[in-house]
Length: 353
Ligand SMILES: [Zn+2]
Ligand SMILES: [Zn+2]
Image (cartoon, rainbow, N blue to C red; front, side, top):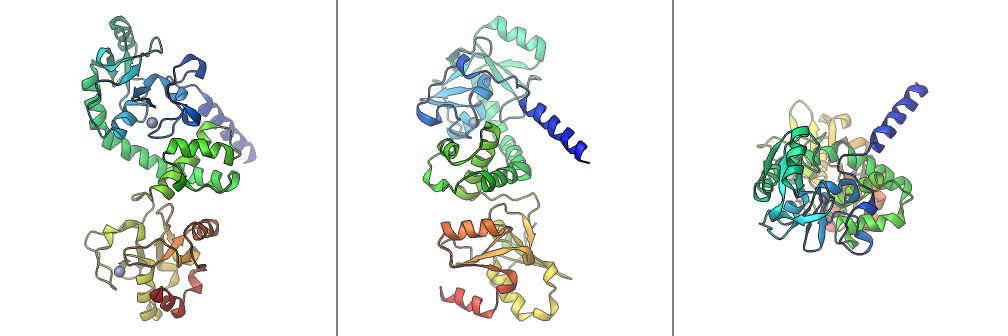
């Protein structure tokens, strides 16, 4: 078993260190941003040398990809942008660039790769080897915009499935407490984490940055994976609101009939009036950070914080005690409770806040 584990570790190590087509060493490229975020994409925080061959520049921002350029400029036309010539590694104006889209070389932040070239003979040579279609910038940019939705959902799924979990674990184990609210971009957060975490690998630092930025700064709704699936017509039995509008606050009692609530508070009210009919094993809540579904009996609840749910003051649920205390500190919570600590007095106290 242990040997098998070592083998898997070794394999992961090899894979993660295999150089990607996009990657170059820092001294071979041009990096126009200043300060400690020089080597990070301002839109996603990723390392620019690692994804250099798809880098784009616009107004002194250097993006890892056409995806990030399009996303952070809301799809606006950008004739004055620059792109890396895949062959020479120098930046060229996008107006003069030939793009190859959908080649067999992997893309950056996109299912459809998009590589640019300055010279026609280079673009032909690349296409002969790796396939794809040759287009101009306007067409490549259009494609990037069309891809944006799909790519963003692909990226979110990957983050929900893996990155947040990895990032959170690393953050709790290797970093001092960092407040993402104090940073203006994911790139500056990542640069700040460098001195607060004992992490040297870029990929690991990226995971921490993405985890903190998405879950604590953007309070991202992280639907889908492992979350409580709320039917469109489900109404909270206490307040009558449609619960699917508030997926990150959803709570559920999985009895003969499934009951959905737009927050823990309303669910508790319901439970108190139907105590004898409900088995605690069938009560689920949504972890505030990951938006995954967890059993209420295993959760920790922050009471009296400055974060409000759809019904005002809430008992905000977390899957781990550490997260609950971290949240309590950041958001001036009054106490951390387990499910079994929540009684009529707590409910009354909330109502009085
Ligand atoms: Zn990016
Ligand atoms: Zn309600």
